[in-house]
Length: 129
Length: 380
Image 1 (cartoon, rainbow over the protein chains, first blue to last red):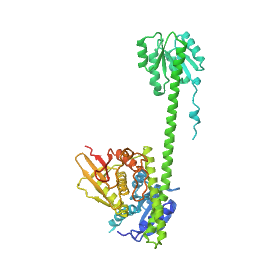
Image 2: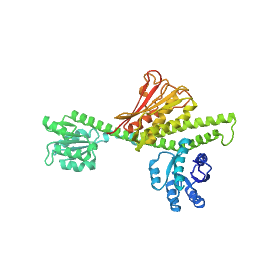
Image 3: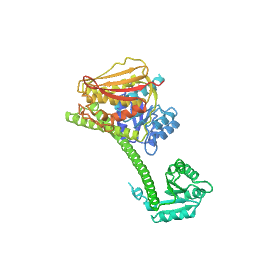
Image 4: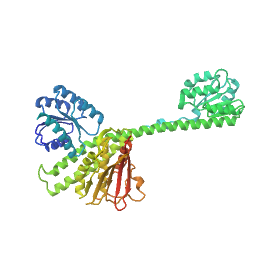
């Protein structure tokens, strides 16, 4: 599986954006965009229309859930995977109910993050054939 | 923390006593004896009046006459106990004579003692004091327990918050140092590689410690939630082995897994059970000498599924078995590759497994090493 599309990474922590970006680059040659908060994310999304958004659940000012809802107002077909730091099932379930495709736990070993990301990307690419 | 509330405990002489008797003379005699002790007194001439005055006066003790016009003492006692339940002040009956029928009925109505008439000053004062003392101790104990459990949940919340906020930066340090070691981003000198390896090892063991503290805080605060889903246990074990292989390879340890069965589906919380299997595997690798074999088995019978992990380590030392699944229960055996241990891993495993209604056990193997088993009973 190789993924060469555009990914928007949204997390208030720079090192997490860096880490997830490096992991995504192991799956192909994606274009990586970054946003440090929900407002920036919405702005970048509107301008760049990325293929995938990786969205942190807990961020100051506008949290991931709120950002997710607004992203889907902007583009009902937006592909969003939530980033969470623990099995916070309640907010993960809520995000999935609001149209998130899946979630990744960013405290997992990078191999597990990569596998989970690849699994979701395969589903994303295939239906388009 | 502010402890002034409990330290400022009520004095015996601050206690309030409600005396209920239709005979004014009795009230006067009892009041005389008790006033000398410094108690605050209130009186009622009937059961009805006692029920009315009780909430306003909020006594620590009630002296209650049995024979009264209107509702009698037993009935008054029953109603007080019913209304105030565990908070109801102790009730001592005043009995005309030492009649055993009255005494027994008084106890069954909820009284805790009786005072026979005519009153003996020494007896009245001492009995009242004894019951007030135990009432006070009871109140202090309740307040203390409440304070401790508040302090404990504050500790758990704090621990959870601290661990949670430490986790992301640590995951970042770990992941980014792994990328440096990949050398996709450029070659490292031997010294640089050694430094990055040190950073990686330190972040790994800190992340594990933080994760385990967070798990303990979750479990202790009673927030361990089991989210059951139909799960293929063999697939789950294989996944866990796949990721454990990386650490095993470093020590030249081999992990064998040849499941002999097809039916391995079960309703469990996959994340939590994978955490248990991860932990058993990591222990097996950690405590086995380099180049050994860890064998994993999955067996199933009519009434249970069993996951077993066998290692070739030193086994569980004699007499230390009961420490194995306890919090911070580190044993005297040491990891063979300098790995770290918090002593929380197996305690967490046990709690997760038990929350599934399953059991985890450990035993030494006859020749070498030991076996950890997780047994899931199959519901019928």
